[in-house]
Length: 276
Ligand code: DGL
Image (tube, rainbow, N blue to C red; front, side, top):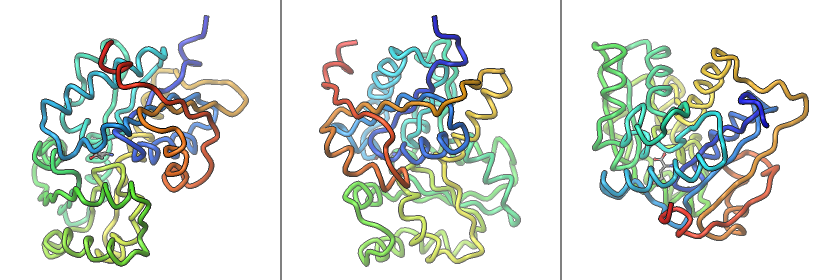
C-alpha cells in the first residue's frame, strides 16, 4: 500500500491555466507525483453562473479524488472563488484554492495598501478575493476588474507580444492603474502567460502575484507542516487528464509549463465526470 506521503497531489482547472500551478509545484517539489485534470471540453468556467461552476467543481473534485491523492489544489480562480476555502465535497482530503494563498501574498508585499485583482467575471462577481484580503487586513483598498477575454486570448496561444493582447490589456487595466495600486493579483491562473504585457502596462513598480504559483507554495508549506512531503529520491511523475483532445492539450501546454510536459496526457469522456 502506498504511504500517504507518497500519494500524488491532485491539481485541476477548467483548462490549461492550472498548469502554471503545476510548473511551480514541480519547481518547488520535484519529487512529488502529480495528477492533473483540465476540463478543456467545458472551458470557460468564468463566464458561467455560480450554480454551474459549483456543479463542475464537484465533478472535478470527485474525479481527482478517484486517484487517491493526498491533497487537492483547485488551480482555478473561478472554482476557488465559488466553492469557498473548504468545500464539503472535498471530504477529508486537504484542499486549497488559489484565493487565500494569493490574498496572503498580496497583503505581504503591498506597501501602499492598495491591491488590484483581475479575474474572470464569475470570480470578480463573487468578491472572494476582496473578502479574503479584508479578512487578513481590514484597511486594504481592493480594486477588481473582470477580464474574461484574457482567457480566450491565452487559450488561443496569443502572447504578450501580440498587439491584440496589448490593446485589451489597456482596456481592462486602465481604471485599476489609475487607482495607484502597487500590487496586482492575477486572480485567474491563465493570466501569468501574458504577465509581460500586464507588467509593461502597469509599470515596474507594480508587483504581480500569480495565484497558481502562490497556491503551489501554500500546498508545499501545508504538506511540510504535516510531514506529508514525499521523500522519494527520483523525479515525480505527472499524469494529465483532459476532457477534450489530448493532442490539443499537448499543443497548448508548453507555454503554461514553461517547458516540456514530462508526462502522459489521457483523454476522458464527459460521462466520467457526470456519471460519478
Ligand atoms: N483558469 C481559470 C481561472 O483561474 C479561468 C478560465 C475559465 O474561465 O475557465 O479562473
